[in-house]
Image (cartoon, rainbow, N blue to C red; front, side, top):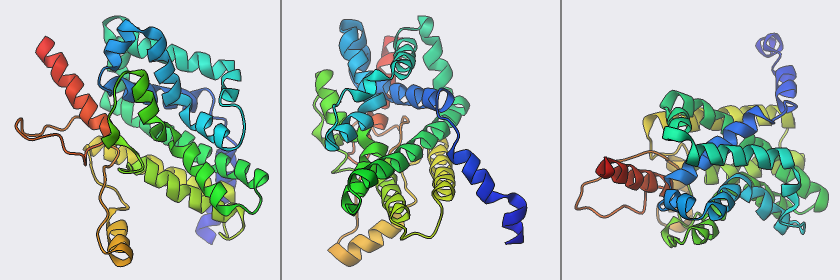
Length: 293
């Protein structure tokens, strides 16, 4: 207790939870989201052939979670587009990522040390979105525990959940990337985070919201940065999930983990469905670039 009082954890958590996300954290969120869009197959070609379609895809990557959550809560799916500053900032990032001369902006933000910082900042926004989604659902459905979890989950991982619709805008259909079938680490973490924030919101978890936001943000930012740096396919949940699934359902869990990095596989071997869609897309894009050079 003395250590906690010296560190002023509660006070720091309170300050952190009230920290504004715009523009620094939101900018990092938009950069990483649109960076992952550029890894997708055909995204560069679409940006040359149809800038409008490319822009719509970028907006889905940046605001898909808000759109999906608004639809679920009975609001207009275009409500978030009234925030002009956010739309303009995301649009500026989209333009720089796809159209900056000599690809300079992309090369800067894709540089690993810079990317690690951006990825960590993105997770700060993700946790805030989960907490806000649960809080919003709690006001609309005071005793709807499952609704709180679902809305918080959608707010944290809505971009991944609408990815198949976004693929249609680019003329691509890859059902094997369905996040429900192959949940990535951020998608799983969003679900677990939504459960924790729901327990906190309904007073089943004896911890303040600010402290939970701080702790879960540290976990998410650290884990995602380490996974990105190590090009990891693993997940801190894998061991527990495998044990629970074997205990409850008789078989270990299987699925892809969120890893947006290039992984070389044998030339004759087919692409493994256990890899994330961003990883496969980035590898394909890089191979095309090397051939063109």
